Length: 197
Image 1: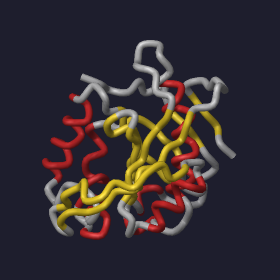
Image 2: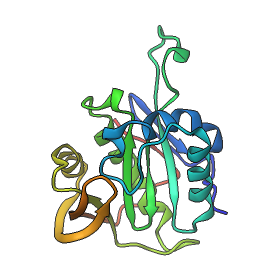
Image 3: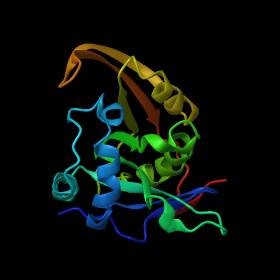
């Protein structure tokens, strides 16, 4: 079972990236039930919180899965109970593949780019050849239709590596091409907690 050490976090001005836990299921179902959020994934939308719990358990059961959630840090004047605690997911879904997903209510505000920039030092530190396998690059896959996602990847430092034709069967869209983006590690070392401006 792979449960991420709770001390491994990253914080930006607006976000906290922390390990995925079972208690996040109710916020995760808010993402997983939305057709546009799930459109380019291998899963159909679902409002079943038990399926979200099963998905979290599946993440914890896979050795190459290292997932986190993205929390929006509330302004001091805001009651955090007026919105979801978790607004997104980010992590190594099948290392070295990384990915992210956000609640559609939070699209377009730069959160994905901010979260990915904060997560990547954690990824390269974790997969540096100590207890874990060493990866010289991280890979992100996206549909050619997802221009906003491609922009996020490029802003975070990923570069287009290749286009794979008709290699992904989507349950809604059928066979799709995949754009493969990569980010190669730098030799800079980082700790287990990262502060990103």
